[in-house]
Length: 143
Image (cartoon, one colour):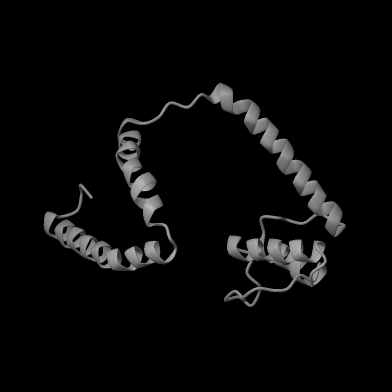
């Protein structure tokens, strides 16, 4: 922004502030409807100055303490990945939405979610969370 003309930066800042202000009513309503007003007021907003200070000053990270956790989590991820491969009967690229969708919907016959613009089925976090609930119901005797 320091290389942008002041007049253009001012226009941008004014439009940004205007749009942000227009969202106040939308978010207020959402907070009330979802009973999150108290959480927002008592937990989230008081943390804003802390987050600003962290962003301004930076934070120290103890990489020595995180290294063992990283190894442990890597081992857990590897075990989960192998369990997935064992369940399906072959390896596939878990990070490929196309391959993951093919395994979930065409091989495991899980109920598909909404379609993507390319015609496949979505494998975003919300869709996978929904599949987790369906899978849990099936394991508990539901259909």
